[in-house]
Length: 354
Ligand code: KG4
Image 1: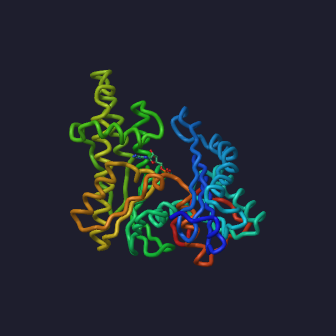
Image 2: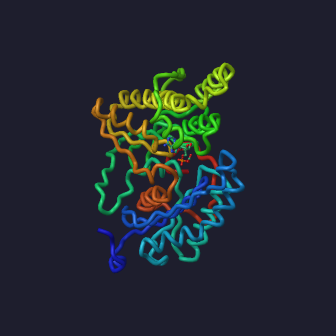
Image 3: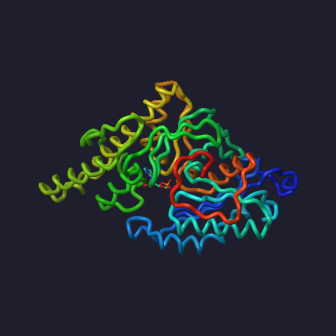
C-alpha cells in the first residue's frame, strides 16, 4: 500500500534526508520510517578522470541539488510544509560536496521554519537496513548486531547496540577495501568506479588460478594496501614476460583478487561474531553491493547460524534514504542541530554522530 495524499494530514513524522558527501546528490522522504521517495543524481563527469575530482563534484552538486530535492518532495506526494524535520549529511566526506547539502538544508530549515538534524554518513550506511518500504517484508536486524561497513572510504566492523550507539571493533589501518577494488580496475584499465567492473569480470573468471597473499593484522583491523601492491607487482612481472597477459587473463585476475579481498573481510567478521557471540549480521556501504561478498556472508551465515541482512542494491551506495532514516532516529531522540553548524570532512568515532 502506498499512502494517499489524503493520509498526509494524519502523518506524524516526515523526514527529508539530504546526502551530498561525495559524488552523488540525493534526497529522500520518509514517513514514520517508511520510504516515500528516494531521488539520486550521479555524476558521470568523474569517469574521465578515474576518480572523484572534488571541485567537479562540488559544482555538480550545485547543479543537481534543487531538482533532486524538488523531485523527492514531489514524488513523495507531500508539500514542503508537511516536512517535520530536515536531516542532512554533516560528514565525513569531501568538504565542498558536504557544503552544498548542508547549506541547502539550512536554507530550507529557515524558509520552512523546521528543525535541522545532522547525520553521520557512516551511521546512515549502518542503519540502511531499517529503511522500511511499502509492500516489502522489511526485515530489520535485532540489537546488538554487527555491521561490516565497506565502502570507498571505510572498512570497519561495527557493533551496533541501538540506533544511536555504536562501537567500532576494527577498521582498516591503511586503504579501504573499495579503494582496493578501484585501484585494481584502474591498474587494469577497466575504468572507474572499479568495484562493479571487477565484480562482473570475476563472475566469468577462475578464482583459484591466481592467488594473492592475505595480510596478517592483529585483532579485527584490516589492511588492504599490501594486497594492492602485490597485484601491481604480479601484473607487472607477468606483463614483462607476455605483454598480452593482462588482456588474456583479466577475468581470472579479477576473480582471484576479489576472492582474496572477500576472504580478508570474512575472516575478521567471523572472528568478531565468534568472540562477541553476536549472530545478527548486516553489511553496508558501496562494496556491500559486491555479489561475491553477498554470497559469502549468506553462505557463512547459513553455516554458522547467523541471521544475515543484505541491504537492497539501491541502499548500498550513497543515498539519502539512509540519511533520512538515521535522521529520524536522532529526531525521535530529541536531537536538533543549530543553524550555525558547519560540515566536517572527518568525524572521529560514532557516538551520537558527531
Ligand atoms: O559507499 P560508496 O558509494 O561511497 C563511499 O565510499 O562513501 O562506495 C563506493 C565504493 C567504490 O569503491 C566502488 O568501487 C565500490 O563501492 N563498489 C563495489 C561494488 N559496487 C560499488 N565494490 C565491489 N563490488 C561492487 N559490486
